[in-house]
Length: 223
Length: 206
Image 1: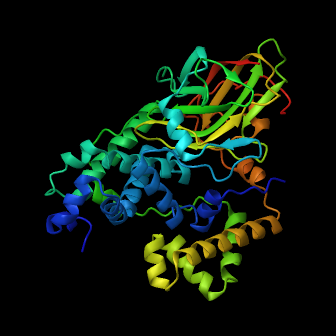
Image 2: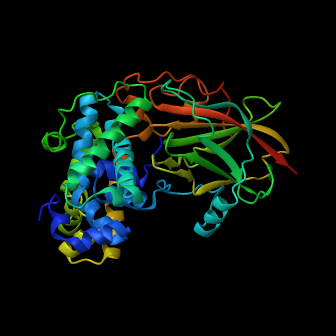
Image 3: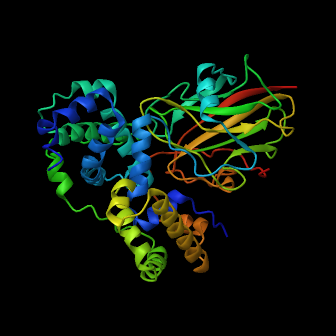
């Protein structure tokens, strides 16, 4: 069933969603999060805001979209008939506009970025440090099949723990342990390759001068 | 060489710069709670406020920062956002902190978000006599998610002997990326990364 069609045919879900039940919220979230993420990426790309396209900023935006959508007022305002993806898309667009305004940027002004058209656009992020990409590729190539399967489910497909556990036949605890193993292994691989997080950040291409920040403080020795 | 890659950073790398399953999980938890993202680890000196205590602190929140000498200012130049950041002690019943109290940070996530750095300078002391709060000694920096409400960080600062009684100026910086102490000690903070900053007054009594 498509995400767009779920509410009109599942009135129990709609009722639970309006009551703010966690399971209903999570089901709605999982149905839409990737489409909304793609839409947000398209919007910030169009706005030329590279900083909003960074993963941490994108996580901020996504959380803000769903926090607004999950507010009592927004849940009650949804009529249960309209395409909920479009409803979320409107919230997402407003969130981006708010963020751009906070940064003193020009806002999106035309209405041609209909949400599903934009979300269908390519959203591949090619802006990775090549050193890190090389280390990651080598690390993944050496993974044992069980860990590769966990990686595929969680980091490629973006599945929830519940989905991944069911697919792989693992307990959620085992899944979390495998994820920790993946992180620990990658951390070691990065260190072995001599990649410094500090140097990596320092070598990143400068962000556009969206704002003018004054020096934070005069010099001083850290404690 | 700094090697303290956080779980979130490793997750981003594993997901090749996208948002993977663990990130989606965290985002849902934050959206469902309407609160900020939890820091990955705690520093040795930092007090992790238990959930119940945090709720209690929210209920008895006492602003111990005096009237700020300068209001919170968006670096975008779009205006001033007063009281977007507040500091206070969970145990305070009046506007002071004492040794043993936990200093907490409250951010209005509607108007300010990002990685939070903070340090204090004692009034009358030299600028080089800083007491660093964040980034912590292990490099960890709390993160405040944009959201519909004010957020109290679940990581506080234990007021210890390094805080001699007196008045302090506490500088708080919110940035798009975690900043190192060295970046905050001069003009080295990447301008585009700093979203906002403010200075608050804090009084510590014996």
